[in-house]
Each structure stands twice: as structure tokens, then as C-alpha cells.
Length: 298
Image (cartoon, rainbow, N blue to C red; front, side, top):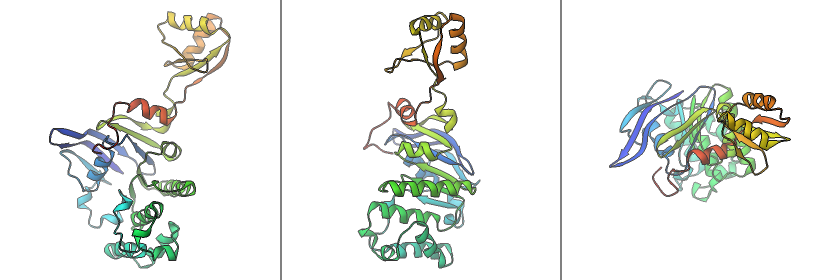
């Protein structure tokens, strides 16, 4: 479990992270979303001791990262796949991690197999790797200590569709076995597919959080009727605001049960009445519309 409590990080007069609080739970994948510059990467760097918080605390399974005696056995981290030593081979990088953590030599070959790096690829210098291969190597390094927590920043960058599907299945299996996954990604569809919980950050502040089901099923109601203007007037008499969609339906924030009751009392036959399930992309854009753009501090 990752517990973030009131975390703030300031750089002079600029506040990169502002009183952020959330929890990534055991056995679940938590999607951590926000535009570039919103504070995601800074928060994740604070989690693993690379950046000091101005205020607040982050604990992993009840302990601060810097207090873990052998961090790789508890927390697997991938923040920047391009930061690996370009002059070493993939096997050498994994071997260094294996020796540092005091693991059996067999773990190196096990991890190469898990991430599908061939013996030939493992013997190549990382400087000659594609970004997708670096991502696979980074995931192997994060997993080599068999940690209970994974913290991954944009791990799907550079992966082809098959690689993205592989990563999705890997992380889902990891969480289902009792692991905790905190996953940052700009691939909103992938987050929508894999995440159990979602935390959205904008301008350094949490703008929305909850289970995926709660967030994506809280978008109001879509209704169609034979006499839509009449239904619209009936809803308006109860001060229920509506908008007309491009597809010709009425959209409202109130519960479908109430809309159905109003339609019945108004004698309007309905052809459609359902919850307006907003997609993650729509929700993301609506909630983070005023957040910083690319090129600002993250």
C-alpha cells in the first residue's frame, strides 16, 4: 500500500505539488493521471526519495522509502527508462541489480524471460536498444526483487500494441496476486482498461479520485423521447437543467430514476433512458482543462 498524506513540494514561489492526499491499495491498480506539468512525476519522485517534500509524508507499506533496508525487495520503480546506463548490456544492468539486492543469479534469466528479451538482445548495449526494449528492461529491473509495490511512470512509452497488451496483462496479474500498482500514463484508454482506481491531478492538486466505476458512472443521464421538447419543459419546471447532445438526446446531471418519473407524470414516452457513462478521456479533459501544458515542471 502507498499512503500519500498532505504532500506539498515548492520551488521558490512555485508550488509543483499542493497538499496531495491519496492511497494506492493492495491488490489494485491505481491510475495516476494528469497533464504534463500537473505534478505527477514530482509526486512519484518524492515517493522514492529522489525529491524531498516541502510538507506531508508518503509511506510504502507503513514505512518511508528511505528507511527500507533493501528497497528493491519491497518497491519496484520505473521512472525513466532512458536513464539506464547506455554503455552496459541489458544482462549487466540486471546482474548489478541482482547482486545489489543479494538475489540468486537465476533471477536475471527469469526476468529476461518475463519481459521477453532474447539472449541476443540481453547481450547488446542499452545504447542500441529501442525505447520499447528499454521499457522492458526497466520493468525487469523493477520486478527482479519480487516487490509488493510497483511505481511506474509512463511504462508503456515506446511499446507497440502487442507490448502494451503484454504489459497490461503483466500488471493485472501482479495486482491480482496481491501487489500494489501505481501507474502513470498518458495512454488514457489503457488506464481505463486496467485501472481499478483513478487519481487525477491538475495544477498540483487532486481534482478527482475514486474507483474507476464510481468516476465513470457519475456523469448524469441520457434520455430520448418521442416528444423531447415536452420532456425538456417538464424537467425545466422542476429546475432540472438539460443540454441537447449533437445526437439529439437530452443530457442532465440528475439520476435516471428521477428523469423517468418526470417523463411518466408528463405523459412522455421514452425511447432511451440510461446513465451517461463518460469516457475517461472526456472526464480527464474536463477536470484538467486549466492545467499546465507540456514543457513545464512535472
